[in-house]
Length: 310
Image 1 (spheres, rainbow, N blue to C red):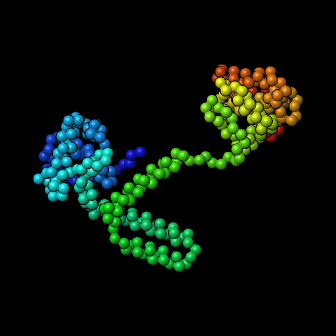
Image 2: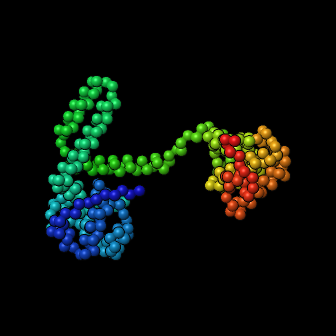
């Protein structure tokens, strides 16, 4: 992920020798200034630079030859007037650090103020978290020293920006692999058409509250057995929750209609294989027809799901 950076464009560029070059060369130079990172590096291939600058590949190559060559009319005697050098993956702007250090007074004062404010805040946090009076005294002296410190150099500012960029990248990476919040002990896994769905203790507790007449753990074992026996009919990651809820709701209703008091639907407990097949077929038919499970009715078109409070 690329980071945003900026480059100050001095008005004196119009008096430089590079401004005497062709339009395409000037455009490539401005493009490289805009692409440079805080260390003055431009990472690109020649075709990529050509595309960014919106000039032809030939014009881009000619411009790079000009920047890599000595310039007797350059205002800077460093590097014999050369403007760039080749590095792995691109080029480095040779005088980038010099121009970066040329900041106007107001901008430097504002940046110094913010930098010292951050240092004071960091020291203050350390002091407030310490129980040792000697450490408190030492850190208080540090605060005083910070207020009298010299403004950070341009190199320190560059290093700080690079560190911030690295921190942001690490933060994004850690966020991408963040582990979900704890959901209790792992109870079982249900095979899916791709991978497995993990069922935790919190899930079981929630289902037991919603379907009090059902032996939820036994039904989960039955669902797993069905999935193992029917690999071509396993559910997707996004559809497994709906399938389990439909299964448990039907078990709840059938338990009441059959007069069972132990909360076990006999069809899914192995008492009647044909009845279990019928229920599974009804669930899959409701998926195929696009009907949504009605949590108030308990099942599609009939019955009622008993309230947890009843």
